Amino acid sequence: MNRPIDRSLRTAFLAGALAAAVIFASLAAAPAGAQKFPEFSDARLKQGRAIWLATCEACHANDVAGAPLVTNKASWAPRLAKGKETLYQSALGGLTGAKGTQMPPRGGNDKLTDDQVRAAVDYMMAIVK
Image 1 (tube, rainbow, N blue to C red):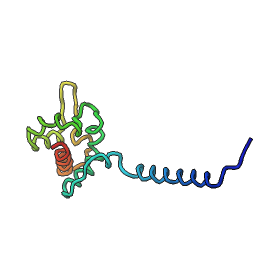
Image 2: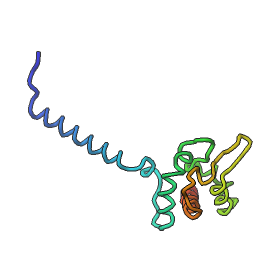
Image 3: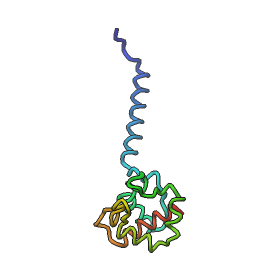
Image 4: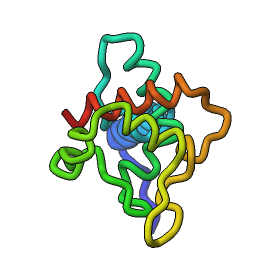
């Protein structure tokens, strides 16, 4: 038996559906990692963040290919102790280990300049300090 839906119930349903659509659209418009990772006021770190989100986040936020997660400060302590020049060289030239390529040069993005790679490394170091 079909009964007409109460007007106030239909209005409430439509309002809820509209609110859910607005929330979903706003989340879908933002880059995936943009909400999870900090923003800094420094212009270089802002640049580094944008590069990092576009190139580095895929591995360093998702445990891909053994990449150290930026959420694991303990795994970064020995890397930070080597100094930023060593980290720059690793990011620029890539890393090869017993299992082969661990990280491709420039995180696999050959279009990045040396300065852009260094900015992304600076951003990552700012997260893990």
